[in-house]
Length: 434
Image (tube, rainbow, N blue to C red; front, side, top):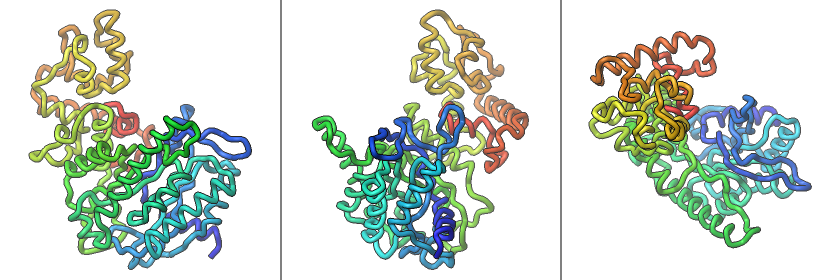
């Protein structure tokens, strides 16, 4: 098969893996080598001036021994198949880099013949890039569940980031849609990578020239909507992964019905709004001091699709509001919808010089369309004349819908999201400001 046809097949097959956007690696340029990465990372929209920074995102092969019901590359599916060789992957990456098409590589694969066989091929490809082509740019590699840890360790010496995709958030889901896989085979390499990263950090503190191991950390991906698992269950799993394995990111992928199967749900379209809510809640877990049991609970196990999770939490805890902006501590300010991490810090710093009013908050970057319902400035409230959660909810949704209508084509890059989701919610998912 011609290289161009392989590239078309295997780049298209890789689009369902979303866990490849940020790196956090800081490989410096070295004499005699080509490529480098920045400490703040490589991602699809990274530079301050708006430049798109791209990765070559491909599968090594889409031949697979597994028959997972949700996967387009499953063994029983009738799709075009292809496989690269390690030399072809290395040559493609170098040629694309030299033409300034990419700045790094994201390499994943279906499981070909066996986990160990596939892992050996992936390791060979990245080894050729590093040692033969002297490529020092960013590489993100998918670790294959079930592969021997010595192979994973060897690969980790050459790459910046690794991911082990969990895909389905429960044992029940795996048994239903991917019976050939098991939870332990997935968790085991994640645990090994975490412990090996910790070991490499300790060695680096003692020995200046010790070899790095996955310096940009590891990530994973969860499919949303393929099983009946609640949002609370998914969020609790993410929280456990962040705490137990020190993951850099958990990525959420709305289930795309690529085939028919009796165990798969019948969906008119992917649950993109739900995916968006999970990303927003993920920000709350990582940067805002929330825990999964606060955001959702057994009585309310799924997100309100009309409101972002932070706003929904505030309305369910309306007795805590309004908050006096000139007295509340940093952590309480973070609980106010419309106040993000940066604006909370600015408020703390600015009020040392005098009391803040409504106009001051605008200058500090507070999203007052939401915050005004939950704050007072020197005792003055700027929201509606009610602290009833239903009244506030109605007012927020009314204003959000009006804002979305006014936004028009300016946010057309987010047009894949249904109109149910306000434009401000989509932006908040990306910026992290709630």
